[in-house]
Image (cartoon, rainbow, N blue to C red; front, top):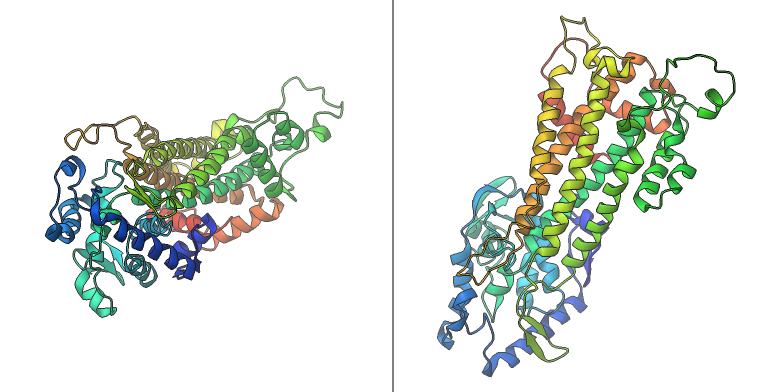
Length: 507
């Protein structure tokens, strides 16, 4: 893929999940050179933050000319202080792409060799070791980006071909040279929102896939319950003027097309032939089956907004100062501040938690025989009392949903002053993105258990041949690796396999 000045979510998906290589275009390289050459000339006789001054609260100290290069190395080495588990390679790769696109805006004044080396890391699968904890989200992701920067200068550790190794040997093996400082590259590579943005991009991609499955699962739930289908009708949902609600209803109508399981209210309840006083079939199903457009609609709308914010951020210059060859000036400010990402990741995790709560309630409907009235307890196809079906799986789904609810408290409003109060109000954007990541992982666990319950219920009722074509396809694909069961066996491996399937398979 030829890298231009901007990138789309579709292109990011190809680089991240299909390992499409990235090639810097001629105009991008030219833009880098213009920015670098301007800064080189402009900075000769001026005081510019991070070039000939210290960093943060140390900015009041001027740095002598003979120490300018060392200054850039010092910020990298001194800030590589992360702790905790390593950030998974996919998220680090996304962060490197985000950092690269900040430089491609041509407003950072970095040498083109830095962008080319980051591109080599991305394409060759050289992934810096980056601990999860360390960022307060302003000046961006200083600590985590310092760990990435450490590997670009040939130090620290990387993951390569499945192993954690020292960076120097991996660079030598690939014929790559560590980056040498020119003007301000140490500050530029560590200063900005790229880690939270990278995590956010992966979060968004996984959340979009999860929402597709939530729609499909909800249709299949209504097929199992033999619901009346007017809750997803166009006239009903157009009566409420929300794009997300209308889109979810449309997606459900597309999915349910051809189903012989759902019922038509006009054929059964509007025919004037009903004289019974108590109806054996529910006139309206529970909210977890009936209110899908109204519940998943806001989730859909949030995914749209999250994409807008994340794509705007990744295609922005998010370091400081901003080098502008067009106006022949260098501007000092706070583009490294992560509030946009922090706020959006809080909203995203709240949306995904609500989706998870919906899935958990649908599990409860399937597993609770006195509520559904058509299935054995816990969709147990074995001997009741002797066998237990998916009874214990509900414990996992319920506890995981509860964790999502707790994790949905916002990080955006949890600023703590630090850095000698230089950073007196911060975003906590990377924490917010990491919590959203956990919520999304949890949601896949709950969705996996729901899908296991759905296919068991379909076999219990023997309705596979009456499902819509899309439901039949999902059923058959799941049954290919998760066969019907009656005897009790451990289910943890099947849950993990289901999670992998849901993440990879477009429903």
